[in-house]
Length: 79
Image (cartoon, rainbow, N blue to C red):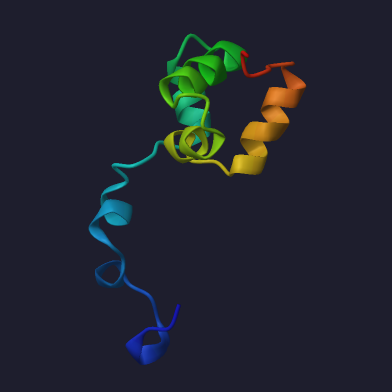
Protein backbone atom coordinates (compact mmCIF):
# COMPACT_ATOMS: atom_id res chain seq x y z
CA UNK A 1 0.00 0.00 0.00
CA UNK A 2 1.28 3.44 -0.84
CA UNK A 3 0.26 6.49 1.14
CA UNK A 4 1.00 10.18 0.68
CA UNK A 5 3.92 11.15 2.88
CA UNK A 6 5.24 7.58 3.05
CA UNK A 7 3.51 6.51 6.27
CA UNK A 8 0.30 4.68 7.03
CA UNK A 9 -1.96 6.14 9.67
CA UNK A 10 -5.41 5.22 10.91
CA UNK A 11 -7.11 7.58 8.46
CA UNK A 12 -5.78 5.54 5.53
CA UNK A 13 -7.53 2.33 6.66
CA UNK A 14 -11.14 1.35 5.93
CA UNK A 15 -13.54 1.78 8.87
CA UNK A 16 -14.16 -1.98 9.18
CA UNK A 17 -10.43 -2.55 9.74
CA UNK A 18 -10.09 0.38 12.15
CA UNK A 19 -13.03 -0.80 14.23
CA UNK A 20 -12.01 -4.47 14.24
CA UNK A 21 -15.70 -5.36 13.87
CA UNK A 22 -15.14 -8.15 11.35
CA UNK A 23 -12.92 -10.36 13.43
CA UNK A 24 -11.58 -11.07 16.86
CA UNK A 25 -8.02 -12.32 17.42
CA UNK A 26 -8.08 -16.11 17.42
CA UNK A 27 -6.41 -16.41 20.81
CA UNK A 28 -9.14 -14.24 22.32
CA UNK A 29 -12.08 -16.05 20.67
CA UNK A 30 -10.64 -19.45 21.59
CA UNK A 31 -10.21 -18.32 25.21
CA UNK A 32 -13.75 -16.98 25.35
CA UNK A 33 -15.41 -20.16 24.13
CA UNK A 34 -15.02 -22.81 26.83
CA UNK A 35 -11.25 -23.06 26.37
CA UNK A 36 -11.78 -25.98 23.96
CA UNK A 37 -10.19 -25.08 20.62
CA UNK A 38 -11.58 -28.10 18.77
CA UNK A 39 -15.16 -27.36 19.80
CA UNK A 40 -14.73 -23.66 19.07
CA UNK A 41 -13.40 -24.41 15.60
CA UNK A 42 -16.28 -26.81 14.96
CA UNK A 43 -18.81 -24.20 16.10
CA UNK A 44 -17.32 -21.50 13.88
CA UNK A 45 -17.15 -23.85 10.88
CA UNK A 46 -20.82 -24.77 11.37
CA UNK A 47 -21.79 -21.09 11.66
CA UNK A 48 -19.87 -20.42 8.42
CA UNK A 49 -21.56 -23.32 6.61
CA UNK A 50 -18.20 -25.13 6.55
CA UNK A 51 -16.70 -22.32 4.48
CA UNK A 52 -13.08 -22.30 5.65
CA UNK A 53 -12.40 -18.79 4.35
CA UNK A 54 -15.40 -17.36 6.21
CA UNK A 55 -14.40 -19.21 9.39
CA UNK A 56 -10.86 -17.86 9.05
CA UNK A 57 -12.15 -14.29 8.74
CA UNK A 58 -14.33 -14.71 11.82
CA UNK A 59 -11.40 -16.05 13.85
CA UNK A 60 -8.92 -13.55 12.45
CA UNK A 61 -6.58 -16.21 11.07
CA UNK A 62 -5.63 -17.41 7.60
CA UNK A 63 -7.50 -20.09 5.68
CA UNK A 64 -4.35 -22.23 5.90
CA UNK A 65 -4.48 -21.98 9.70
CA UNK A 66 -8.06 -23.29 9.61
CA UNK A 67 -6.99 -26.14 7.36
CA UNK A 68 -4.06 -27.02 9.65
CA UNK A 69 -6.24 -26.94 12.76
CA UNK A 70 -8.84 -29.11 11.07
CA UNK A 71 -6.08 -31.59 10.30
CA UNK A 72 -4.65 -31.34 13.85
CA UNK A 73 -8.05 -31.99 15.48
CA UNK A 74 -9.12 -34.54 12.85
CA UNK A 75 -12.12 -32.46 11.79
CA UNK A 76 -13.74 -33.42 8.52
CA UNK A 77 -16.58 -31.70 6.73
CA UNK A 78 -19.72 -33.82 6.99
CA UNK A 79 -20.96 -35.36 3.77
